[in-house]
Every structure is written in structure tokens, then in C-alpha cells.
Amino acid sequence: MKKLLFVVIAAISCATANAHGQLQFGLKGGLNLSNITVSNGFDGYSYSTLASFNAGAFLKVPVIRSFSIQPELYYSGQGFKGDDGSGGTYTEHVNYLNIPVLGKFTTRSGFYLETGPQIGVKLNAKDKENGLSQDVSSAYNSADFAWVFGAGYKIPMAPVGIDLRYNVGITNVANDSYYGNGYGQYGVRNGAFQLDLYFIRFNEHVR
Image (cartoon, rainbow, N blue to C red; front, side):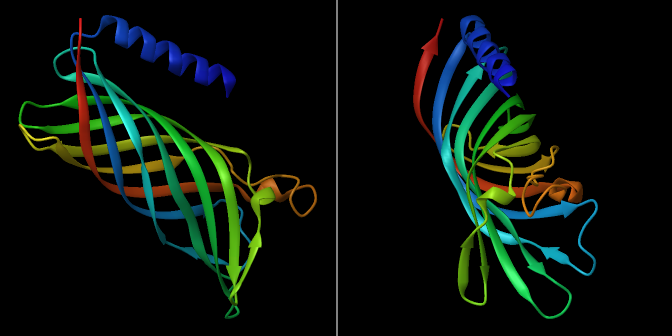
């Protein structure tokens, strides 16, 4: 993870040094629709979507006319709703500090496509069942690695845009030591749709 962070920082520094255009700082926030996939799950269990929110900031660094690099830092409320197959239901909230670095291809009309890696640092995790809340942070690994696919539209001549993306979890987030050795065998991976509004707050010319 340290090596990946080093690569991310180096890429941002290089892009900034070579950029010609407007360096844009912005704020974003919106809806999360998250769930998990389990490759070797508990018999009879099923999982459904949990609604939450995300909020944070980003920096758009131009590289050439239609391509930019966009690092972000934002809070992401994730998790899922579970059913044990015998009438028992529960909700798990797993919250992350996500750090994506996206390559962004923008058309003159304002539409764009974006993709790139994302590191998620686990903040906490709670299980809610029958009105009771329990801390289950130890059930999840401290970091999650995902790949982001997205598209959006920035209103021309206005500091406002809309962004839709899907974060595909790549790494197993189940902590192998939880409930004794072997919990990681269940292969738990995150997934989240995000619909955001964003506001560009400051522009600085980069020479």
C-alpha cells in the first residue's frame, strides 16, 4: 500500500509540473448505493443494497486539452443489508476514507469519462440487528483496493456538475483472523454506485 501511495503522489507531482491550464479544486457529495459480493458465502445468506452518502474534495490537474488527472479524498458510507435465510435480518455499515486517482477524458460539450485506482482506508464498521448495534471493525481489513469507472457532465460556464460512477472492489476485505482463522476464505468484496453533485470552488492558472 505504501508503494502504491508513492506512485500516486509521484504521478500527481509529474502531472502538476507539466500541466498547462486551469488547476481546479472542488467539493463533492451525494448518494451511495453499496453492497458486497461473497465468493464462498454462508449457506442461505443473501445480501442487498444499502443506501448511504459520500462527501469530500478533489483536485483536477490538466495534462492536455481533453485529459486530466483527478485525485480525490472523500468519506464514503458503505456496507450492506443481510438476510440469514431464516427470517433474521441485519445491516452492516462499513465506512471508508477513499482516495481515488482518476484519469479523466472530457469533451468540449462538458461530458466526460473517468477511470482509475482507488484506495479505501477503513474508518469503522458496525452491525445493527434487532435494534442493537455492535462494533465489527475487526471483521474487515484496514484497507480496500478498488477500480473506479465513471461518467459525468459539467455545465458549461458554470461551477456545477454531476458525476455517476461504480467502484468495483478488487481485494478481499474479510479479515482472516475474525472468528478465528479462516474468515478470509469467504472472499468479501465491496461494490458501490455513487451519484454526486460537485462544485468547483477555485481556479488557479498553472504555467
